[in-house]
Image (cartoon, rainbow, N blue to C red; front, side, top):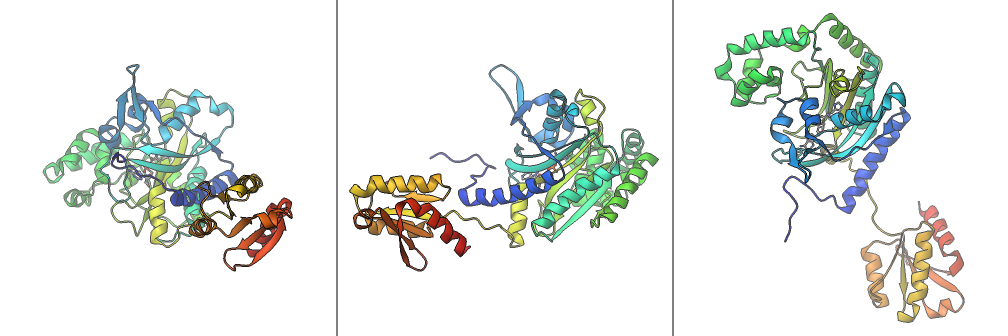
Length: 422
Ligand code: HAM
């Protein structure tokens, strides 16, 4: 018996249907705002993520699926979509396509994390990335789109947090200040945070350990220590958000786990999901395109975790309905009817009516049982007596009512019947 790899899931037909509904809603929203779709490869050069996400980040340190291919190259299954989309943007000269350029994606991601509720090793993200727009109006639009998407799905029990984490001009001085503060409390920090202290002190704010949280209560926050340009940007963002009626709170601890962020960071968290409560997050990454070898073009984006979104919808009783049942099940009275029955089944499917047929040529009774099990709305009964007049019976499986219909008209009649019941 083979089993799926730990941290992965089989997404079965019913769930695929539900996901499609979520994806369609996202596509409708993003395309209305002139975002274009993009899909990048599942794996990339490892170096892209090391440079892009940051050598000292948790993801690069502990969570990447990195392997050598047969040509001796180090490759990594993408742990996130931003660095790959930036790589594609530069490599394909997409700045020449449109400027600014707004993109969206729906792609699986891979992180070697400890699996638990809401945390997988293969998970999907719905995300957007905007290139070439430096102002806070775009930050506000991007945050609005995430919140608006959740609103359209009916989600209520969530909170939106924003923060500014400064830029390369103002952050170094703050980091010194933070390190100075933390240096007096090193023995109160967890092992991870002592590592963060030396490699990436800002990330100490991500820690959930009680001891570390207690230390941080007295720490200086980046939010209060940014330069005037970052401060103005943050103020501008809040003005736009207020004008757009987006509810938000400032969370001074929201530093996020990627080195590429500058200025704006944001996250939407659930009130219902427990430990893994971030449904979506994002931020501005102005230096990233240049850091990856492209021109000096700013960027901002977010990603939503599809599996967490599904958990949230489940908690709120909002899971979309899916219908896996065929509209018409073609049943027939014996082997001599099989060819005609199969032909009718094909013509129904060809005309766009979801149809089914019994490949096993079981008894009529067994075929009806199948039709019932699959919850077919109608049975199309192919029998010699009716066929002699070039007709079949359509049985309404709910009411039991039967109608004699010329073979040529079966599709049209079924379509009309479906319209009537819908
Ligand atoms: P992130 O916060 O790492 O950001 O991931 C975004 C979302 O993906 C999370 O809020 C969560 O819902 C989901 N997610 C993350 N890890 C897992 C996991 N192990 N299992 C299930 N779901 C997970 C990014 O990835 C950035 N690239 C977002 C971004 C786009 N920033 C700018 N542009």
